Image 1: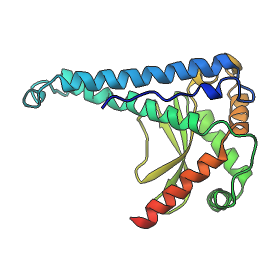
Image 2: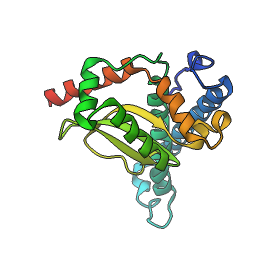
Image 3: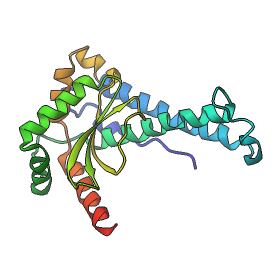
Image 4: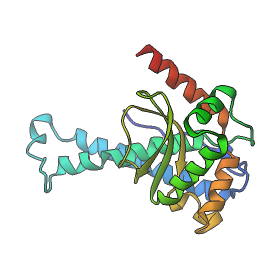
Length: 206
């Protein structure tokens, strides 16, 4: 199945603190990940099943190399979609259920923000994900390197923060602190709350 890039034109020029150029270039990069996952999967499909073992090798093999890199553009695609989908808010505060979940895990909204910033400052070339843990039923921050290293199991993803330099260099240079402030001003808490609702419903149904 070919993955189609989603449209995010409505974000361009409508995010406080972000220039149209910054968002346009970020969307273009996301589209590149969509293109690459489709290319990788198309190449894998060309290799017959009975030949895949012969083309897989720990040191080097065409099939094994395609498989090793598959998670990078795949996760790069859906992490960016999660990121863009949780933007577009208007400084509204989280809903009551989400606020209680944040306070239950971090003690307060301000503590949560401090922890997010601490994780983001040290997650260069990666992501910070706010997650709901299906085991302890609490919220956590998950640092992800590149797009695929460090993703924890048993997590439902609620909020995605891109900490790669491409997410902020045009507007903020190396000033990641100001980027994080702009990001927080644009979080769409309605989307995050909906993700939490779905996550807890799935956990109860399991």
